[in-house]
Image (cartoon, rainbow, N blue to C red; front, side, top):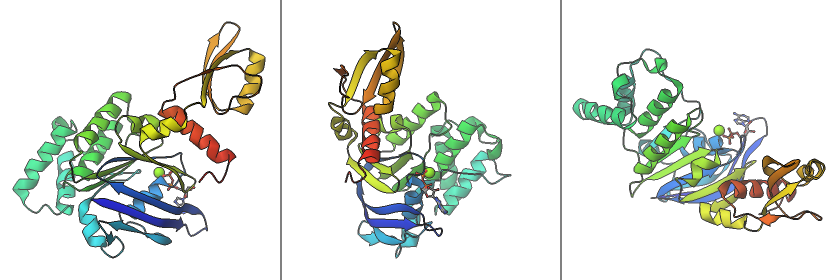
Length: 297
Ligand code: ADP
Ligand code: MG
């Protein structure tokens, strides 16, 4: 399947432009939407799941405009909002059963089997009788993920799903999503955490202040930072100047000064060694360029 986002703009009622002429095509597989807080990720996701109308532009799913085919689109979508909350007074399994019913699963028997299966896959089976709002933070997230997946959606949209998870749960969650990579499924994962992208996504986009500043593979983004990542040892004095000139990404005490890694053009007078960039470096490099050269696109 294919999602085509065309010239999408969202201006909120106060006049704030949260999305600015976004063009993006997303095909089967796991798609990572990376950007800092306020970039417009949640806005984009709410539009994709038809909870909100864009100000202008359109979204086509397999050629169908989602504002015309709202009902059909909603049936295809599994959504985990960023601020996901549970209804009080429902046990974990009841909550999933409810979600499955909303997702159009009418057979009680079929739902029962699916609920158990989902509880197993997110590791909550032994907590199935616990009230959903009494689960720990990480468990609540997992139940949230289970409700998004229970009706076997072909468009899975999860907004900052790893926030608040501990490292072990984060890895478990990434694996759960990767396992879902069925052929006719699109998974869109938004995050401000670079590490969420590198391990799982075959395609990604970088959103900043409502504008799309990168769209491609994580590897290609990394290549963009080639030749812009440096390591050097500097005195305290040089360090103090350097940090006003370039984004410093790591600092380790060394001798009387610092061993630092930084991103960008090599400032005059500094000797440094090139470092092979990773996605984190590339992210810093891109964001820094965006701030400096406003019209990067
Ligand atoms: P992200 O999810 O990337 O953090 P959001 O889409 O939540 O970004 O928000 C993008 C921008 O739009 C932010 O500056 C935010 O303050 C603003 N915004 C979000 N929702 C509203 C709203 N309902 N009314 C006005 N401004 C909003
Ligand atoms: Mg958000």
